[in-house]
Amino acid sequence: MNSKRFQQVILLNLALVFLVIAAGAFVRMTGSGMGCPDWPKCFGYLIPPTERAQLMWMPNHAYQKGQVIILEESLYVVKQDFTSQQQYQAENWEPYTKHDYARFNVYHTWIEFINRLLGALAGLTTLILLGLSALFWKKSKQPFLLSLSIVLGMGFQAWLGKTVVDSNLLPAKITLHMAMALVIVALLIGLWHWNKQQQVRIEFSRHFYGMTILALILSLIQIGMGTQVRQYVDTQMHHWQLLHPEKWLADTPLVFYVHRSFSLLVLGVNGYLGWQLKKFKIHNPTLYWIIGCIGFEIISGIAMYYFDFPLASQPLHLVIAALLFATQFYILLQQRTIKSKI
Image 1 (cartoon, rainbow, N blue to C red):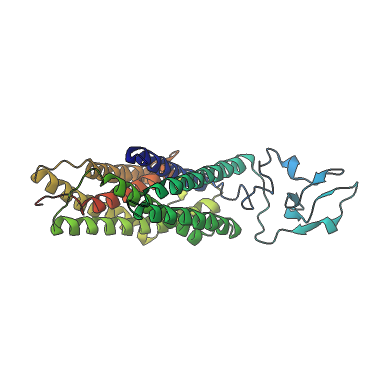
Image 2 (tube, rainbow, N blue to C red):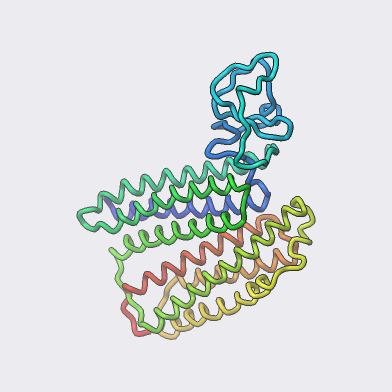
C-alpha cells in the first residue's frame, strides 16, 4: 500500500468526521435534534416523510413493522406488517415509549436525516480505512490497531447518537457525544502521524514538549467549559423556542465569563510556543494553524455574544474548537520525532 494514498484516505476520514461535527452543530443550532424521533430509521422509514400527511393514520394502507404515525399528539409504532381497514384498529399498534416527543417539522426532519447520512458515510470510510491498514500488518501493527479503534469508536458514537435521541436530547449525553467525536479525531490524527513519520523524523526538547502538553490541557479545559455554556444556551433556545437570540445569553452563569477570559490564556501559551519556534528559526505550519484557530474562536465567540448568534456562528465555533484540538494533538505527536534544541 502506497503511504501517500493511505494518507489521502486518512484525510478523507478526517474531513468527513469534521463535516459530521459541523452537521451536528447545525442540528443543535436549528433545534432539529428530534427531527427524527427514532433511530436508526426516521419515523420508521429509510427515507423520511416530506409532509405530515404521511404520518397520519390512513385506511386501506399497507404498513410495515416499525413505521410510525402521530395519533392524538402521540407516536404509535406498527407491531407487524398489515394493511389497515376502514376503521383504526388499536391492536395493530403500540405506543412509542422511549420519549413523548410527537411533532413533525419537515425542515428539522431532513436536517437531522442528512446529519445521520453523513455519519453513516463517515462510518463506511472508516471500514475502508481498516481494510487498507491491514496491508501494513507485516510492517507495523500500529495502523491496523488504530484503525480498529476508530471503527469501534464510530460504532460507540452511533450508539451514543441513539441514546441522545431516546433521551430527547439530554444535554449531558450531547456533550458525551461531542467528547467521543474528539476521541475519534485524536485516533485519526495518531494514524496520520504514523503515516507521516515514515517520511520525516523530528524531536523537540522537554521544555517545549511540556509547554505543548500544557497548551493542550488548557484547550481541553476551555472546550469543557464551552460545553457547559452550550448546554445553558441549548436550554435557553428551548425555552424561547428558537426565538429571541438576544436573550439566549441573558443571566449567563459564571462559567461563561471564565470561558470568555480563559481564551486569552490559551492564546498566550500558544503564542509563546510560536515565539519559541521563531526564536530558533524553525518553521512549523501546524502551530500557525493553532494560533489561527484560537483567533477565529475568539472572533466567533464575540459574534455570538454581541451580534445575537448570527447564522452558522455556533457550528463554526464548535468545528474550530475541534480543529484546534486536532492540530494541538498533532504537534504533540510530532515532538517525538523532530531533532532540535528548543
